[in-house]
Length: 204
Image 1: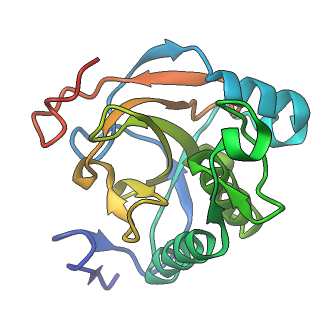
Image 2 (image 1 turned 135 degrees about the vertical axis):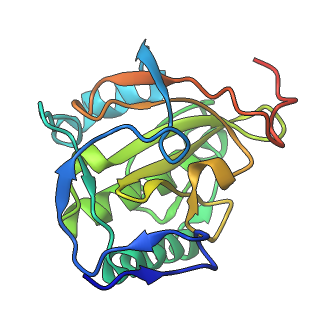
């Protein structure tokens, strides 16, 4: 099988020439280390109550996606399109509350709406739910932020409304806190992010 390399995105990462799902496996460094169950964000609890169909996916065999050039380009396209199409508006400005997660059908939203829309589009394109995980992080200002983790055979990749590139999780300037479980869209797991990086100074 011919191996292709996209150095501008992930140095020395080999991408296979076909796409399919394989059983998830741990690979320290390329994959986030998980640390047990976590409470779901309040915004996601309300989102699931109001949009139950978006939170019903369950599996006993979570998968990672074997990445082809075509699939990688699809990630780039979805990330760029959603970032371009949604106008940033805070929940307080839009809904009068500090935190509210919903589909951005009116074309505006904050970080959670970007993530929810990217997840929705990739699901429609045939990506497995267990590989598309809403993830909560702390940014360089120690503020809460949401990104989409995409589980691939090349590691955990991040789709973000603050960064145009699709990057490996460890190349983003965030401290990772928790994300949706690979086995259930309605439950969450904590992330053990102990890296000494540019975000090491962020408090707990």
